[in-house]
Length: 119
Image 1: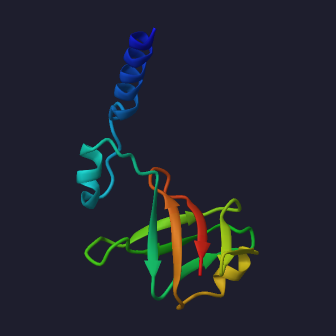
Image 2: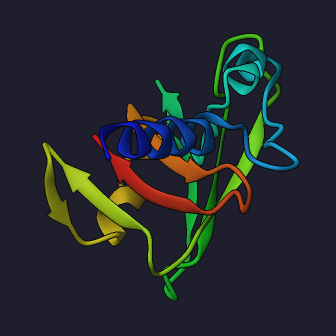
């Protein structure tokens, strides 16, 4: 019985450690993670000077760079986007007041949709 349980655990560990079919190609800086089977779903823009556009309908965008050598990207703000000031959730409209100030913008890599903005 112990042998059967050990065999099942070994098989399960292979299943968990296997890389996903097709993988997830993101930035070149993540190539080493991809080879290890790590799939990143979120990334962040750490903005020293936030460039944000937000409409009355709580839709808009943020432009920024993930790293100093990376290209500028545009990510989409939706009404589902959350805003946090000192780890306390605040109305999303307050994020628009952060133009030109520092903030961190977390977004989903595949959809480029912003999940949260914090400062």
